[in-house]
Image 1 (cartoon, rainbow, N blue to C red):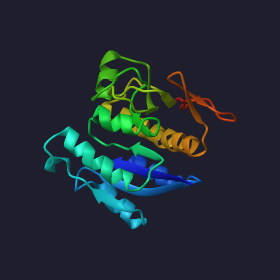
Image 2 (image 1 turned 135 degrees about the vertical axis):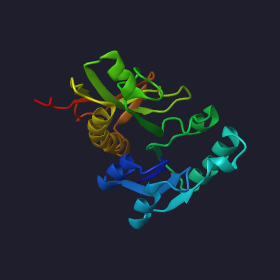
Image 3 (image 1 turned 180 degrees about the vertical axis):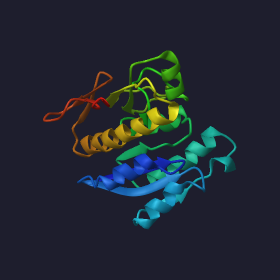
Length: 211
């Protein structure tokens, strides 16, 4: 059994997808938010999951907040920490403390379009393929060894809203899968790259085109 702590800032739809997946061997022991009004807290509490709030506004800076967050997380003896829409830039000390057991999902095919406004930038560039990426977190923002990606075609009439909505469906597929592989001890970090022990599907999922 692997203890998993999930960090959110809002409704936590990816958190919900992971919980709903009912992954064998995964113990979702806590959901922690940095915002008291994060809607995902009530959703988790209704399902009997421990919740906690650590309001970042009450701390003098990132280092102080991350130190307090580390203490809170470590109280659950986690094997894996999952960032599910946790809208904080984490300090290097925090990331290094959880090296190899801290994962994130980003709405682009990394290393493309790191940072914010990914869909706006992709549409402005006229890309034909977009996607999302689950990766191990490193001190460099939106970088780190890639675990799993999903790709889909960008439609001629796509807007930021429509692309974001279709992308979220893919996120809800690949994030639970990546967590499942971690729980099953099938992820190996070798020379900075992730290898998935077989038997496993390809680490890129291609969504069917809309005809």
